[in-house]
Image: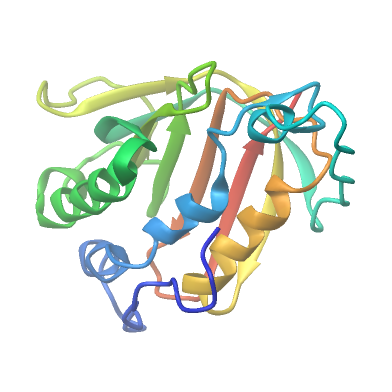
Length: 215
């Protein structure tokens, strides 16, 4: 979990920022959401993390809290085009990989010239969680209606239709995104651990969404 001084500085997004400018200023600071996310700490019976189960059998389970305010939505199949990286918590590898992904994303013209995007939002997807909770995959990109005509050098990720717990996040996203993930991680939410998403609006407003796949 990030402590009170553990957040990287994040520039303000200009109100008239383009999608590319938006991604550039988000490169630093968003990686802290993964620290608070603890999403690779896969839960057993959706009650408490594996790391806690590994402690003494005599210890009492940590009481589960109510999840932050959210709504359950049913989302159809999602098609993302972007860049993908398999990563791990080992040696803080995920932090390096995530920062590098944001750098590549902000410097590439390919993502900002797609003709079949369904919105002007930036999606960060966390998927392919390993059983031991240490490995997972990060994808940063745009949502498209289909993969038709997409360049071969871009990653294409299909996400199956799923119900999600959708959380609205507002205010200082540098702090509110990690804080929301921290609350989610300690709550009794029936997570499916398929694919979870962060959805950022390129309009420059301090608002985003977290979609947590649920059973």
